Amino acid sequence: MQPVRHVYVHVPFCPRICPYCAFSVLPADRRQMSPLVDAILREKKTVSKLCVPLPETLYLGGGTPSALPTRELERLLIGLLPVSTGAELTLEMNPTTVSREKAALLHSMGVNRISLGAQSLDAETLSFLGRQHTPELIRRSVKILRDAGFCNINLDLIFGSPTESLEKWMRTLEQAVGMSPEHISAYQLTVEEGTPFAQKLSAGAWVQNEDEDAKKFLETGKFLESAGYGQYEVSNYAKLGFESRHNQAYWRGEDYLGLGPGAVSTVGSVRWTNPTDLLHYGGSVTPEAHGKSGQEILTPEMRQKEKLMLGLRTAGGVVIESGWETALADLLEAGYATENQGCWKLTREGLLRADSIAQLFF
Ligand code: SF4
Image (cartoon, rainbow, N blue to C red):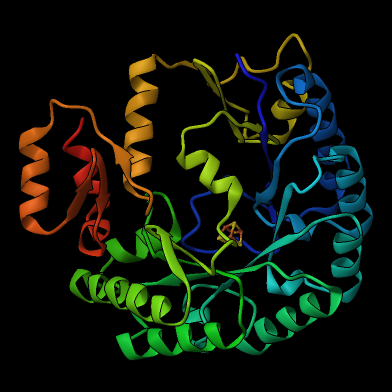
């Protein structure tokens, strides 16, 4: 088994929990931050034999890693470093947690990619999404990050809010492009069970407009492409050379280690999910207990199918072995896919239906 080259670190704290969020998150509580950093660093030691000494990508996500106080953020990074020369080191930030002090610290410690949870540049939509920041704060955050020296910034955006017409969404995209980020992620708002949004939706507070969402998806691809951002995965667009290396490793089906509460790891034929509860997580990072929680054994066929499903969502496409001729012929005829020497790629219309197309192969 090859040592793992990609590491994800989950910091679950957020200044406020968004009503659509289905991630493993906790309201920011300063008293819990230092013990969490200690536990993550203990976990890193525990898994060190599974990982290359110098990872090629390190991604701190959550949650909101930038919700950690500067001192804890510094301690966490010191404990996680070093990474290999030329490694991609990403940290997710929320505009309400961007400060000159944190930006300077992160840059000086080698963080070279920031993913900013902007979500929208429309004030009404930000308020619908329960976000505390304003469009102005997003612009200020980008300026602070640029001033600190960051030259690889992603803006995370969400479309599909009922407050947002197609025109409003396109204005958000125009304003996002106006800030010249190197990368844009544009996710469709999905209402997950158990969230406050799911309750509101079932109470009839609004209805989801699938036709309009499909239009937004298709127009997003066209607009961003014309602005110089290639769509290299269903929801991800980048200027050439700024595609996320960490996420591409997931989509190629490579192994990864996930540190932190609720983080998932996949190494060879084993996948495990750390406990989400901080106390249980803290107790699970010892060599004896680690990796036992939420453990799943993956057969080579299961990993192969995952690879196919993830690869179909990317611009690079996937090589599909024979046995699926009928399904593939239907995709070609509908204009949802193209084929070149056995490599299948979905068209933009196909990417719109990527989830249901992937089901054809299961
Ligand atoms: S900031 Fe992101 S991770 Fe945190 S609650 Fe909101 S959606 Fe969830």
